[in-house]
Image: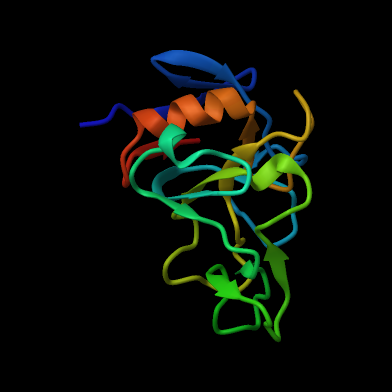
Length: 164
């Protein structure tokens, strides 16, 4: 059994080692809403691992990692039936592009926050991903250095627990 990931006070993710992380610009909340900029509190599961095959070698990743394709999106439209799901372009609703021009989604651990049965407006796309820069807040995700995220992804298994 994989040990739990725990977000500690002071912006560290504890998992054998203590990894510096950034959280949502609005801190941590127990009542998450789409666009509030907060990281949701609770016990979450890691349900997926996505990566950019044009930027990261497959050999550096866990077996369960899935490549991000150029047309992959994540629906953030609370009024759409595919809210908080991976979808493909072209897409009629509002969605975030996963193949970003910056490195933030070069590697992504997907959580089960409001997934797979999403409640409209309760928040979408709560990931562990590469930070913009150390200490820079996110829109609600947990972000860290690519090297730390790679190490973490190799240690985890699907359904590992993240405690925020």
